[in-house]
Length: 107
Image (cartoon, rainbow, N blue to C red):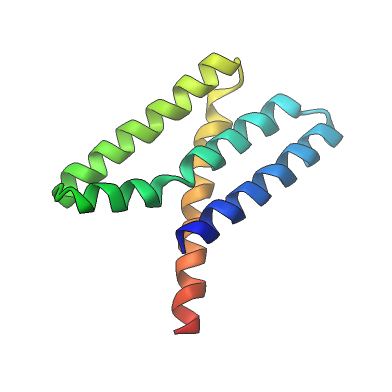
């Protein structure tokens, strides 16, 4: 499931970059794609924190702060807009939910 999430997010990021480049909004597309890519690692972060025995609430807060900080830092370093990156982060969570639903429907 996690691999599917990363692959789907990467494919979606490439499509967004291409579409943004064709429409003349490359900076927006790069920012959105970076949020998607960074957000797709959230599932792996959940597993790592659960393996360490981190309480669920503390782990959720840590992930929220950590991934949001990564997106903000990436936006500042690459000089792109912040809000599209945050939207990309949210889109990655939707991709993960869709992957879980797809896997659940197969079971």
